[in-house]
View 1 (cartoon, helix red, strand yellow):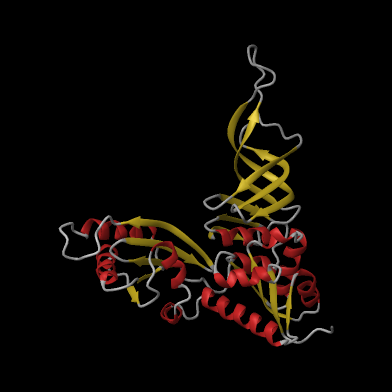
View 2 (view 1 turned 180 degrees about the vertical axis):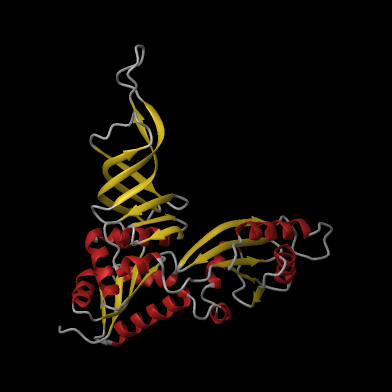
Length: 350
C-alpha cells in the first residue's frame, strides 16, 4: 500500500491500493462513520427539454461518502463501500440517498477518521516493509514470470520460445531471452529482488541479460525444481535455495507458522486453535501469539465483521496476523482448518 500523505492528528490518510493484501488492510481500517473520498461514476438525470425522463448520463465524479457499510470480496480483489454522499465534485449529483464505490488495486482514496487508534496507525505504517520478489522459471522452451508480495503470488505471464530442444539449431535464443528480460524490467520496482531458476544452464544466460537490462541490480540464480512456466514459479517458493535467499521474509515466516500449526494439530498439542469460534475464544482470552487467515475464508460462511473484529483484537493484544494465499500449498492447509488457525501462548480449557 502506497501512503501518499498521512496526518493522524488531522484525521486523514491519502493512499493508493497496490495489492490484494492491501484490500485486507483497508477492510480492517475502514469502519462505519469514517469518510472515504475517492473517484467514481454516477448516473445523473438532466432536466432538459428533449431528454428522456427514464435515462441519465453517467459522469465521473469525486465523492466523499460517510461510510455505512463496507464489504470485502477477496476472490475478485475488490472492496465495496456504501454510504451517504457528503460532498461531490459535480453539482448535478444529488446528495439524497446512498451511493457505493468499488475499490481495487490501482485505486487512490483518502480515508478520514475522527480518531486514529494505535492499531490503525500500525496498519498504515507497518514496522517492517516486506521485500517483493520477481520470480523467473525458465528453460529454452518456456518461461514463467511471477511476483511474490507477502504471501500473495501472482503468475504474471508465461512465454513460449518457439525454439527447439538443441542449442545447435539455427534459430537464435536472443529474442526470447531479451523478451523475458524486458518483461522483468517492466515489472521491477526499486527494492525488488530478482530470482531466476530452471533446469540446465540456460537460466544463466537469462540472468545475465536481466543484469544487463537492470544494470546494478543483483540477480540471483538458484537451483530448484526442474519446472518452468507457471508451475515452475509456484514450485520455486518451496525450494530450499529460495527459502535460504528469502530468509526473514513474510512468505518464509508464514510457511514456518503454518508448518507449526499443522505439527501441533497432528500431535494433539493444545496450544493451537482453528476455525472461527475457537480462534475467537482464544483472541478474547488474549492467548493468540500468531494467526494465519486464508484469503478464501469467506467461502466458509464466516461473518466478515466478526472476523475483522477478531483480527484487530489479536493485534491489539500483542499477537500477529498473517494473510495467506489460498492458491499456495501452505494457504490450502489453512483453508482446510476452516480458513483461520492460530498458535497460542497457552492452552485454553477444553
